[in-house]
Image (tube, rainbow, N blue to C red; front, side):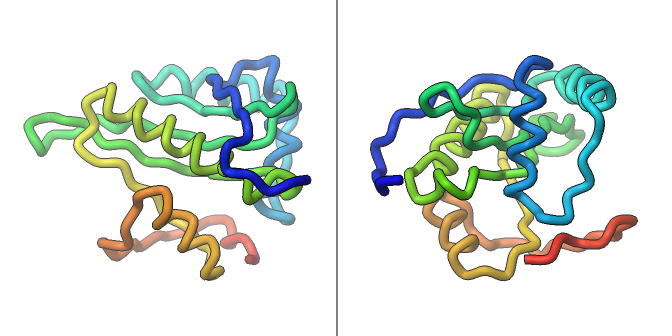
Length: 158
């Protein structure tokens, strides 16, 4: 695939109909991803979208779902009650990386968060790859906080 920064991408909110392609895309996120069945995925998507302002965004190129990210809008009792956004599960199909699609879907999620009055948008990455960190910096993120986590499932292998 030709590398270009102006390739066309149509961004939409994930629907139950997009779930089969989205679940297949997640194989490009982590090789050890635990696949869920479509019925459970449909329930999880509905629960996710029931959180005001939250959405799973999907990007289509020539009708194929090629990238995605999830944005959770989290209510807040500080910052004058302004919520904040948390981005997770940022993934682009391997064959479509380097075309600017990941940055476009991230930008869409950020604009959505601003529209919902978030005072900040944050994300975490477990990747140690310099190119992953560079990607997030190019998308406007900065490494400005220290993150901690407790896990029940092992982190993905990079």
